[in-house]
Image 1: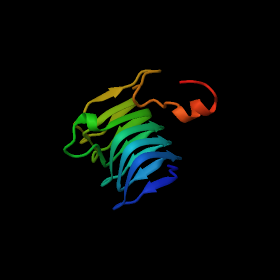
Image 2: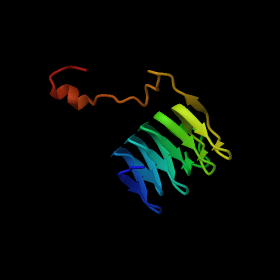
Image 3: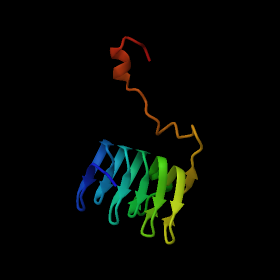
Image 4: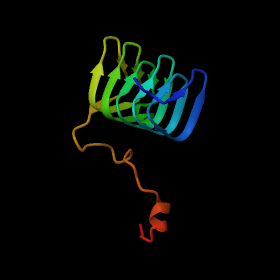
Length: 138
């Protein structure tokens, strides 16, 4: 499994984040996150915020904070989502396909996405600066 980026155990990363080539999370990542490639949340890892995955998603750790509401974390996966025996999701999980393994803990809602379907809030929006610099008006 080829993944270029890693957040090591004990590390914390927050903000508007973009990862090319996938991401392995063993620490904590939060914010507005976009992953081009696989997202793997390893056992002991935690991810929360608004997440869009252009690839497959593997949950061995925690998606969404322990005591947070399902609206606190939204994950949209363009590929397959796998939730392992050790995986816990308190957030909202949306994926094209979903595979649960015995012992997987989905505490928040989940939805399988149909072709062309997604959440407008997670879709990419062209920045205002790019519109102004091209001479076009928003």
